[in-house]
Amino acid sequence: MLCVLTLFLFLVGMMASLKFFVSGRSIRASVSKKELTVNDSLFYRDSTLGAVKVCWEFGDGAESHKKSGYYHFRGEGKYLIRLTVDDVMQTFFQVDVTKEKREKSYSPIRIVAPSRVMQNECVVFMADGVASDWRWEFGLSGVVDSQDRNPLYSYSLPGIYEVRLITENMQYPITHAIEVLPEFVDADSSDVFSLIASDIQEHLQRIVDERTFNEDYNYVLKRYLGGNSEVRVLVNNKKENDFYSYCYGLNILGKQHSTVIEEVVIEADSDVRAVKKLLISQSSSKD
Image (cartoon, rainbow, N blue to C red; front, side, top):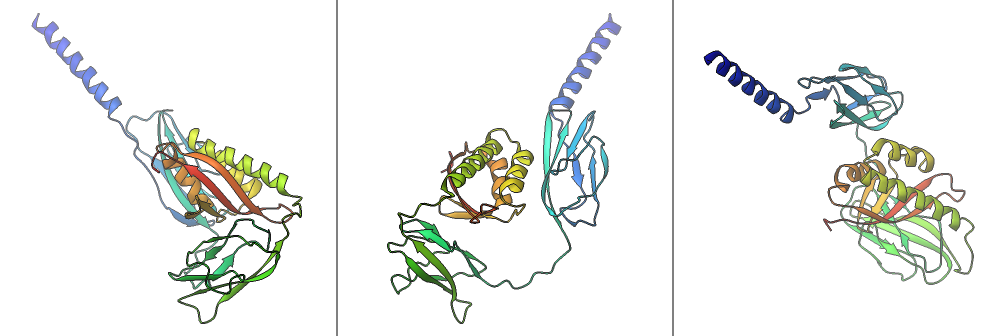
């Protein structure tokens, strides 16, 4: 009787230990570098206790089911690596692949804005560079019109205007010419722009709802942005990101805050070869 009782207690202890092991398990994995060049190899390793099945997705369509190994990225860019363990646990690693290591250098401030707009159209003017004091003159009033970094402005009269921007670091202002067309002139590409914007909006919402970051991010990047992950994104006319950082934030925080992409407006080349800027309106439970 004593032997039976001892065996029973032993089995109960084993079951409790197994339950604790399964419920308390977490991923233990690493990658060798977060920044590398296309000539470097990335070493990846999973050492999760008791892991039976692993899947590494490198963000460029390639996968590996090995616990560890080396991977070589064929092109530069920012990649989100996903590791799935036993089909239920996931973790992510962000890596930045460049052509060559570059030292930081001075980059002059420049105006990012369209060269042709419609009368009474709301235009976003963006300043690319580092400064703290911004002074914009849009060529219509003859005075400083805005001190915001990325102001909004509309022209009430058609014509050609010289936009001027000066900061505390400049001796003289930089300029940008903009042509304002009469509002009765019909823009041939408006329908095309609307279709592109709707498609981008759909894929951004998928990043939030379905967490399909790599698939939808790369779709928009390659189809509409010409592969340029640095395309500027202005959110709710207040805050800005490059396209990769914006999508990465949607993937990580969008679901938590129930983010809804309400509208996407694009600025593109005249022949719609590539989108140059995204203006996005969105809402979330955090707002």
